[in-house]
Image (tube, each protein chain N blue to C red):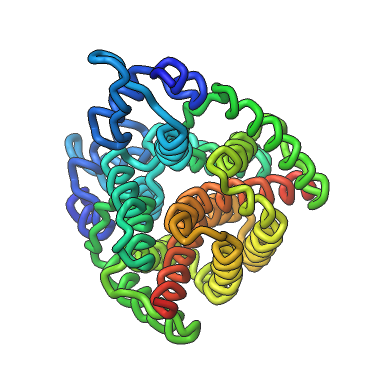
Length: 211
Length: 211
């Protein structure tokens, strides 16, 4: 198909498609004439993925490129492909642990998070961006006087383990091994959007029924 | 305390504190001399909250202002205060349902989400931003050939209901009614960061143990 048809079927504007082509996010089409490229199902599928990552999951274009490269690397272990997806959804934080009480809260948070990981039997890399975010969040609960929320860490972890089980079930139901990486990455990144929107709706409903 | 001490205790740089003062996010200090303001515990507490929302939860400053105004409105019903917090954490999406198959996927997604809400007995406003995000996410799963993920919607919703129960327990354990709004808003916004980081760590651990 021509670029206009690719735009119509994907819902992505032609100038945006040209931008993705220039940025190397989308592979070039086949030249059907010296000045005319032709695109196939593969392009449409890739374009839909880029669109979901950029517009829905708000992943920056530079991170989308890394995610696509990881999906396209048949030799990259699945665990590493997941790592790339994780870095794409973990926002860059400039939070630095400074200030008198911030220091105390942070030390306490590090100990609490380490205890939690040990109790749950979770093995994670010390440099995982999500680990820093978790420590900062627990430290923030303390410094904001919301210590009671920390008491629920295990219950939250338990509910979250359920998501991981669901994701494993979902991946195992897939047939082609070559599509597993794509499926896992989509599940990881869009799963975030899914859980977040479901949580807000559950909250809104509970709040509406009580007010 | 002087602004330098407020900066030291909060971990927020003096120019940033001055910016928050100019933007009206932080109430002005008491004038202790014609050219010298004095700040108290109230300022420190508020500054820590602003810092967590901006740096950790990545809420834009304009939304932080709305969240703080909601917390400070004693006459605003809790349900509406929660609504303001929800809008602060729901990213602006420019996603528009266009394109041939996008249209089909979206209609199907709307029906599936409505069925889900009915099954769970959730009452939500038709204009809730999270509802649009959920529909778009389900539509994206379909258009990306990940229909199998949609089959797990109920299981995800069930796990998410557990979070809401935990948050209600947490709020009910609070004493002062005037701090409930602040606690709910912190739980809503930072709870997002907590769940997201826990989920990524659970995934990483499971993936590491299997590879």
